[in-house]
Amino acid sequence: MTNVKACLKVVGLHEAFTSSHQHNFSKIPLELKRLPRWVLSKSKKPYFAQAVNSLASPTDPKTWTSFEVTQTAFEEGGYDGIGIVFNGDGLVGIDLDDCVVNGKPVPSAVEILDELGCEYVEYSISGQGLHAYGYYDGVPLKGCRKTFKGVKTELYCKDRFFIVTGNIYRQGGIPKLDSFASFHEQVQQGGHSQPTTEDTKAITSVSSVSSVSSVKIPSCCIPSHEGERHDCIFRLARHFKAIKPNANDKEIKDILREWWALAETIVGTKDFDISLVEFLSAWDKVKYPTGLTWLAITSQLSKIPEENPGSFAGVHGQNLYNLCELLDENQRKHFECEPFILGCRKAAEALNIDYQTANLLLNKFVKNGLLEMTKLGSGHLASR
Image (cartoon, rainbow, N blue to C red):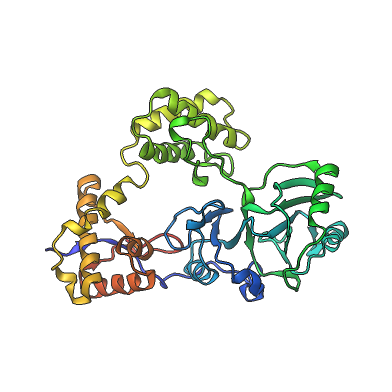
């Protein structure tokens, strides 16, 4: 076998995205750290800490993990925070937006926190809001978003996540909030409705399309501001073409309608039919549906003879070399001679090992000349 030119991500060669005024993880209460439902955050969207650039969901426990794993992934770089998921087990979150002026909460926000009996309170990642946590014994209540006492107030029991900073306003524990239900009702009845914020927005499932009714529109396909519509439409086409490759025009149109319900208030182009034409065109142009190529490649790992130049590192070295051969073959076939990108977390996923071991193997392959690094990555981008 010949040497393989590859793209690598070598953990530890870039600086983590950290900021003392945004994060102080040592101050996060142990009651929260012990819960195994942490996610990474980037642009207020949740990501799974055990897979590279893999979106998480507040409704899918398989995409959550421990605090320790999530913190380690965050410190490798490429993400702007970590978050905890509310799953209906009693933990609740209180989010007060735009209530901090010159570093100090407005009196009405403090009044709300005192009324609820909140102890641990932290500044949000922007520094302009507050997050508080507590426990509530009753049946999970529906999420609430209102302006109450002049403060944008959000209350959640399940299917949401908060970015946790540890940048404390008030030190304390996670108490039982005896008045949470009555306060929730008070806010619902006396408050004024407000739009859903990005950091807690749930991704709506495609319910009107019977053929894909169990599939959720991924958050990466929802624009966060104007100018992202075109890219999001193409990502949407890639995602659903992998799931429903033979969808007819009506089914494709129904998918876009569900996307439009989430994106209309954000995008600048308000004509649905313009987006529909682009979506139909994108569907036809998609050559590599999301996930299809990777799954096809990794499914072939067991078909290649084990004995190879990676054998010096045992069975995991053999498997890594096999994986690189397959990726190289695929890259040459579809992308001429461009080097492929292989991060340690993606390699770990394919080889069923932890990402630290995958990182050590990738470094050793480079040192032994089995892989050639053509471009060093930075931040969340892998090296080539």
